[in-house]
Image (cartoon, rainbow, N blue to C red):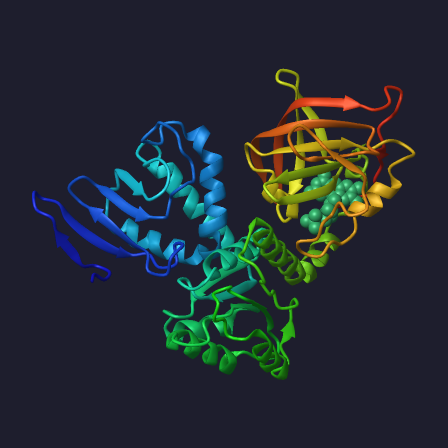
Amino acid sequence: MVKNGDTLDLGNGHMLEFVNAPNLHWPDTIFSYDRKTQVLFTCDAFGLHYCSDATYDEDLEKIAPDFRFYYECLMAPNARSVLSAMKRMDALGQVATIATGHGPLLRHNVEELTGRYRRWSQEKSKSETTVGIFYTSDYGYSDRLSQALGRGVTKTGVNVEMVDMRLAEAAEVQELVSRAQALLVGMPPSSGAKGAQAALSLILAAVDSKQAIGLFESYGGDDEPIDPLATKFQDLELKILFDPVRIKDTPSEATYQLLDETGTDLGQALNQAKKIKKIKALDADLQKALGRISSGLYIITAKKSDIKGAMLASWVSQASFKPLGFTVAVAKDRAIESLMQVGDRFVLNVLEENNYGDLMKHFLKRFPPGADRFQGVRTRPAENGSPILADALAYLECEVASRMEMSDHWLVYCVVEDGKVSDPEGMTAVHHRKVGNYY
Ligand SMILES: Cc1cc2nc3c(=O)[nH]c(=O)nc-3n(C[C@H](O)[C@H](O)[C@H](O)COP(=O)(O)O)c2cc1C
């Protein structure tokens, strides 16, 4: 057993030094540093789910989107822990190579890529709103379910901190409960996990009625029952954020999408008050002038394994001839954002003048998390599997080629692979706006 600061002599001048990096995906993550070779072994941190023949990170442009996506899914829900671990890492001195557990080893861009982790984590932990997620890392599906929930929340810019109930110190639980605006609890096992039960009692004792709560099952086979706990929180007059998420079958991609969208909804609700203030602060003339930028109306539709998504979009613009490509600006907290990563395929449906009202109304509905957005809409599958809307004027099958970060939106550049127009005489629906601070 080793702890922070311990060393282990492997001989031949290789002395491993251990650095605690808790919560960097796992509560017990530890970095190991070999001073002789200046290699830092980081487990999941700085990794990416990317496989090629390259052992090292020589092609930064190729790996950058996956490096970012991996960070968003696994590290962003623990941005403060990332910063603490990096502080300890800095104290080690020169790191020539980062040997991560996933994807290429980092050698050519160590400074650049660690710099990105630092920048993103500083950005995330700046938020005044914090959501605490309590889970049990080695029980049922608690880990992946809470990661999906955490990713959904962080998409809205709200800070997330995840705590393993089984291993957390009492002070750590109390501190997070006292600071967080909302608490999300994954049901721990009902027996044999004393630490988790103790943490649950601490949460119940420390919450106050100004806080909000959300509960979800872990699908571990022996989950603490959800209803009695929900009642206890209700008795303490906490605001219930969403109906407890009950998981009846082995979690699938659709379950993770449900948790992701639940997280986004709740982050948006926590942000609401702040947003209204911000919008009011814009100069009225500027708003009107910007509102004169107009565009067409489109529905983006996407399907990836067993999950589907759709969104009304107007910030769409052709961007290249060779290859044929266009951009679409997608707000960071859109549900469909998860389906528009580099390499993902989707369909851009072009709406028709005088025939767009019903589709626009349908897709602007507020869909509950995990809802089937295509119910009652006539579609057929495109070559790439995404739904084509039968009532669209034209459609384009596309692949996401790159993404550029623009404060509150992702500017997604897409290459067009195929397309058809149903009526060559038909005209695109045009969208005129009054003000520039909404679509
Ligand atoms: C006329 C109009 C145009 C819109 N264009 C865009 C757009 O280009 N990009 C975007 O991210 N959202 C756009 N939206 C907002 C989304 O369509 C809508 O809020 C979204 O579907 C709801 O969020 P959700 O899908 O994440 O639940 C537009 C909304 C309207 C009313």
